[in-house]
Image (cartoon, rainbow, N blue to C red; front, side, top):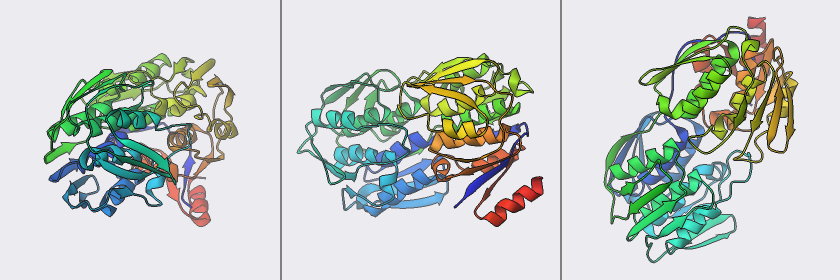
Length: 433
């Protein structure tokens, strides 16, 4: 089993290049099968979730050609099956995007219920509500979602709760429905806009993405396109918080600074300097972690503070002066990392959906388990700032969403290795001792 082993205490300095947004890329790959012409997608992150989805698309008959690790050509004209199910696809949440894509194109789909990180309940009832409103029959049985329609008809859909997944899924199906669909209380996240832009580049007629009302006029067919995925705001934010936790100075390149405004604002509140450039941000942290200041954070849908940055933020606040609070308003099970961080000396008490964090002077190295993708990245940040050696187990979760995390951190001066045996682990410890 692979692990990260980290010798903490090195301020991160230098430049890091951010890859494509995983959450945008997953939906865009699903949408790519909606045309019978060849689609070229660039700036894909080379992470496990992406590779699993590409494998699933290939298994139902689409032609997938990897130009390189970040670029792919997809032709959906060879699809022979609308049943998507293998042991891998059940492990990723984004498998549900294939329902909207296949239903829109073929008016039928059968997809295994998705898995992903266990960070709380993420039901697909809003997705189903949208599909049914457009005239589809949707059933859940034997671990599968089955959707069928003689015809999809445009309609007015109000989402009871802001949902990125439901917004994107309904938008994909509606792109090839008859007539006009209006989605109200739609999610406004950057990757919703990116998927809409991608569909429009294939000939769809979608307006209002990025606002809470999206209007879609269905078209008969979509055509080929070449498209580049937006940069990953969560990967960027992770490196920004790593700079803060280690007292570092990092330039984070290939980003859209506007997508990072909530993250940047909190870093300024805790005492960091943040400089914005056209496609980069620089984070300059106070030299000693306890020079960081306490603050309060509440996760909210975009443009609020992202739930996917909550564990990383908590790690920074754990070594800030004073008492901070982090309120999680999106997922109910997102504090599973707290017990692991406590092993490293953190002072955190969770009451309902609020973490009360008393700042400590430093973290100390320990052996910890990554409970999910973002919490795993947060524990790596804690290890980078800790005194001594930290071993992070279950890095499978981290590699679902971060490409070459250890390599990128080493380029910034971190002492971190990915090891797969006790011998390699001891060799690293010996080297850094």
